[in-house]
Length: 313
Length: 282
Image (cartoon, rainbow over all chains, first blue to last red):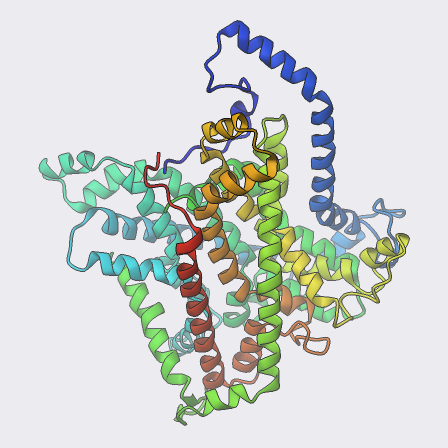
């Protein structure tokens, strides 16, 4: 199968009957007729879609609105618009927990996310190059094993990994979270890049090899630039996944000053048992802001990146 | 290849073997592992909490996955129409799937579904009394399924890409034959889409087995009320990293691998009868 981009824009407005190859006039007339007929259907369609949209986006709207409300108003009030709106909740959230500023957690999350991105992108690209372009014995078996690890529940490795990192003295060290990223353990991205490389003609790098370039040169000067779209997809998804990751930091980071935002959030919820929902929700909003920014900036890459994965047989 | 190999052996194969060995031992992380044979496994199957966690997870997988996929397919078909504003709808529907597993959303979910909270009160306007969600052991599962279904955007986008691949000629031919919507859906859409349905089914099922974050946050790490949110991975975490019974937790991890493996094999087996790959793929 080939991959077509699922862009909603241009294809959505084409003539209704592409296959019949009508003349220009025919197609204009048909289009006008269809438009007239479908105006009512169109209204119903959009009404239905807006209802679905409202349901899907309601939790997000509720989250933002609640972050502006005093806690008493959050639970007891069905009204979405705050009666006594204020930014107090954000002030509470930003003041931090246990004497540690919100920005410490933010910075921890950022450091881990950025290095995770670097690790995953570089190691996956190298591994993908090895799988797609270098011949050696047993490659098919390795490939099958690599694909199988995508289906493997990570819980089976988490306990020994924990023991391993503990013995290496990497508890309370970002290394325990980052080392796996640099070792291409995210098989999905390796797979994605291999599939992408299959679409790049081999002649390109074979020519370079005949000219005497080694694997390192071919990889760095030919493959890497061409692999950029797949690398961007991997980078965006890795950032978001790492930013949202909870179990890893929960296990490996025991000192509150090393906490990432999700772990800090959990501590915050535990400590505000008197249910200061306003501050909890405000902090939840703050924790999601980078993900939301990523979504708005890269939504096309995100969606197309997902759309391609399902179609590779 | 080298980094992948190192990672593969040091962080996947090695730990797997270690975990298999640990599953036959009594190990609390402080002393040396003590070999106790299959005792962990026999204890597991006599453990009511373990059986509860299996029940919770199985219910979640069996109910949540099909509902989520049905929602994803339904909305994808709506989005496959030629209308304006599709890009906006597609983005709006996709966004939740990026954050649904995050701690932030778990907190929001808990606050929304808290007993006598906004969801409860809204339903009461329509005369529906459910007796709470978070604190009601009969309603926690529907709440988790709603959270799963809310994130239908991931499989939806894959379905949408699949739908774009279905040749328009097939529908035109069916129109000529006078086929109705339901027949077109059953005889064209479903078979043509079956490889994509299979992929989504496999990925979502495996993913559902492993839900953890939302269960941990919403139940405060306990699996309550009355064990109704004791998801398998949460119980594994409690045993391994709460009680430091690493051998027991390793045995649980291996049972999970076996369960996921069996489900995967079953799905692949069954797929032979309902998944149609186009021989003359375009």
